[in-house]
Length: 389
Ligand SMILES: [Zn+2]
Image (cartoon, rainbow, N blue to C red; front, side, top):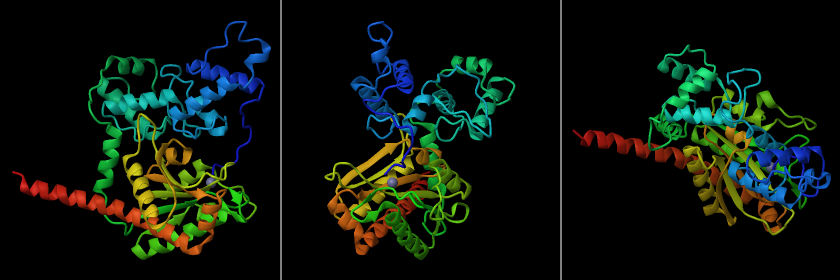
């Protein structure tokens, strides 16, 4: 379940903020601009009507956000980022408040296509993007200041795509992963209970999401130790939570995993829904229609399969999402939604400690398979090399 955010706008709401959202959606071509006097009488322009709801859903689908027609903090942030086109502003690395927007993502994609390594194409102007800009500038004979201003933009525009076929970032991520030691032993796995402290997440059937994910994390942690891997909780050390504490944001959790130089991050949630019929297991990894984390997608698939093979959860499949936790982490990261607490069947499953053990077994089996596959692939490659010339 998503964290509760303030300032949520949905169908039927009215006001200046709604007018702003309409304006943003019109700018993106998702809704007709309310330009004529007919459309823009005071009554229509600031109303969150069916048209806006539809446009918001379209936007959410395109961006890999939860599709619900509701403008929450995450959708609003994405709308805000979408307003920037490359060339609208000078882009540079500002450590305290890095620039974020679609213009940065476009820059990263262009640089990446030419072979300059920006890392993940996440729309955040970080140190790696700055390095890639410098590299590019050196290559085209511009002062290598790492600032993407008019001159650099002109040079970018002049150059055609030089890399064809395959997305360099995806290839690099897969390559890096396969060069790693191909075993789970010694790996640093960050385990993230999605809720805790005063944030209990979904609450139903006398259970709460925070306690369940905390218990699941314990069970996974124990199994990881047995395989020789290190499990770290996002709530350990830096982020110890007292009962009253406000839980860390998704960006904080990602920062913790980045600082720990984790190999993998696993985040655990239980979903909740107004409709008690909703049930089943779903796993999420970083991605959009344009780009995705290859290793993340694979890990999501393996963990989904391994849990399903041990339980009678309904298969709600794996999906690419751009949630902050998945986006800001620098390692393969996935988020597992362990059924719906609001569904009587799933709630009964989750209440059973044996069932939780099976979930934990599935998680660790999926992780283990990820590394075993990598080992097989690299030994195939070694054999191939030996059998060659
Ligand atoms: Zn949750």
